[in-house]
Amino acid sequence: MAAALAGSAYAGYDPASKSNVAVYWGQNSYGQGSGGLEQKSLATYCQDSNIDIIPMAFLYQLTGSGTINFANIGDSCTLFDGTTLLHCPQVGEDIKTCQSMGKQIVLSIGGATYSEGGFQSSDAAVAAAQQVWETYGPQQSGSSALRPFDDAVVDGFDFDFESTVSNMVPFGNTLRSLMDAETSKKYYLTAAPQCPYPDSADHEILDSTGVSIDIVWIQFYNNYCGVQSYVDGASQQNNFNYEQWDTWATTVSKNKDVKLMLGVPAGQTAAGSGYLSADALKPVINYVKQFDSFAGVMMWDASQEAANQGFLSGVKADLGAAAKRALQWFA
Image 1 (cartoon, rainbow, N blue to C red):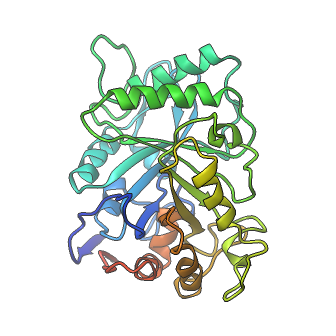
Image 2 (tube, rainbow, N blue to C red):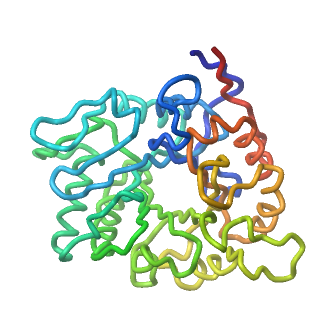
């Protein structure tokens, strides 16, 4: 299997742009265990100039040393002795490769299988945030933390909780403080709430007294308020509620400069509802582009978009950017 490259892969998240694309990687949602459509390495997707930022899914256990899961990519990892934590040197190299191309790589915490429910106390949450920072942030002198990605440093963290969690505000605020104190580069906190507002799982994080979040990519799928409910030309959207999230961004969010991204399935089997072709998404994108909060599109996930030829480049074109067919797989 080989990849033919067309055009530069250099890109990256730009908060001033409305044409950013984020694509989740790590869960092999398309479900192929081998062959041309199985999930490829992180660096493979970074070669695509249509992708700007990649959340890696998931860190789904925070207690102890933590647990990460990247589906079939885990086959190339090994367990640290006596732990459930994978050591993935190649992923670490891929993170650095992607960053050399200007891409941002954030580590997504949670996912559908996350079942810890947060923390029993704020002290436990603060301690866990410090552990996560030592494990995935810059190497700390004297730290004994195990590092799955060796010396690679992620560009931030994503909160993707699908059920109620406790004490995530002190967890998030501690990460925010640690990131802001490290001035060598910009770090991001992102969140992926479902579209019903307020989100039942993330509402404390997203409250005005919650956590200062940089990007919120709202899951406009698997719900009545998904992109499939958008009515083109209507003076008011009754179910599709991007405007409600824009109001949150400008009046409620702790960070009044927060940016919103339209979360969509990247293939027909990526979600139970909400998939639209790139052509069908165009009027939805034209509508949300009128809001100053809008910063682009988030897709679930990389394996789905790779199997759905033309979707990624079509959405990038819908956003008004010069789309490039950066990767074409052939046997």
